[in-house]
Length: 284
Image 1 (cartoon, helix red, strand yellow):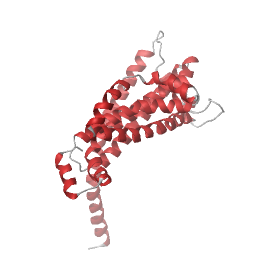
Image 2 (tube, one colour):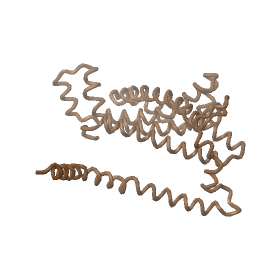
Image 3 (tube, one colour):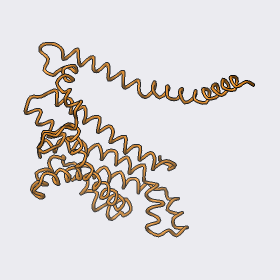
Image 4 (cartoon, helix red, strand yellow):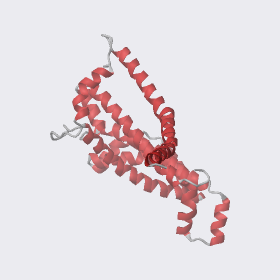
């Protein structure tokens, strides 16, 4: 076989080997990427048509892009004080969310395990949890401001108190739904408390726990945007409120788009971690 024939054979083999990958990518693009792109494009066209008339109250997307182009292309500017780019606004909000949500995860899982394991604790604490979780997040802000005397820890507390309830509830449900066979195996193996917690309890309840974590991270992001409108300072919530006071509707719309994208990314991150942790479990 000549060198040219061998090269052609190798090229065919390589193309054959990569063909399924290209087909899989094409399938993902058609099934996952194309539908939202089409829907977003149609909604954008509808928005443009409805808001382009002279009497329209809201600006069309073309005007939003013109008005906010500098914010889009230069998200990291810093002119001092609250006059910073959108990236710094979002990062400041994410920092508060990270602190409050992390505290909620630790405390929520611990309390959820306690309530799920102990009937006495469930009867004593569940009514308290059910009452407190119905309090709107912003109703906690005056109490936190009075207690902490500072806006940053107050905002973190609001995130914490908002995110903790779904984590507690879902964790306790997951603990109570651990199959009895798992408990019997732990008795046969004579696992101690820590071994039972790490090898039986957490893996079995992980799907429920991560359901609560996904709800909690979404509520955290909602709470910080609302809280920052009141506490001021650098943050995407205060940026929206400040833009409203300045009648800059296009800036508000751009901020809302960023808020939605960040919230979507946060949810997908927790979902990805949850799918990785819960792979192989019965519920997962």
